[in-house]
Length: 250
Image (tube, rainbow, N blue to C red; front, top):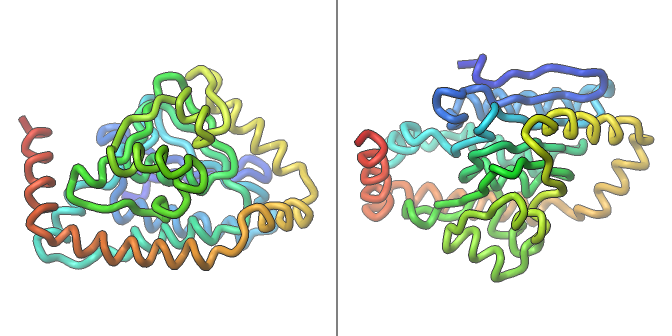
């Protein structure tokens, strides 16, 4: 449903809010499509200076909607909306600030690797259970995480699937700051406002210099997506996903 992604403007700030609280912001293909469109529209609008991603209290995102996964795993189409969003995220031209509270699983973690500033609350836990589900990392995380966390930190996050507390995430450079739940949105919007007030062309050049070419990132997202699609149709992933969904129902 389109109301599962709310897009609003506050001055030069575009806010993209994941709003599916009953499913802890599990992302459907329609939600991915709307976020892609919002990033494209915001980048194209000179009045927008910065993008902000927010969730709902207690849940930034619990990851991909597993019902969508099961469609692919049982022989359905591949769902290009997901990959289109990941490419849009990698190529976005304007700064991104995120505010994370509570659950941050899968894309709920890897999205923040693309952000220029991420604020999180003390109750937040970042987790990527890709391998446990018979899958592989996505969103370019296999490239970005080693750069940010170092090889062993990246393996702990993406291979072991360890949960990273907000404090640990800050210590290893995954996020910028830890703030209390009641101050999260205000802190995010204050930082976004500071960014929006900067000279935009100078900031763009500085950001581009820090990030470098996006081509290697886009290529890695493509490589990950090929493996991900193959793994979704594997016996190993189908068994892991079925077992996980059975446990959830129980």
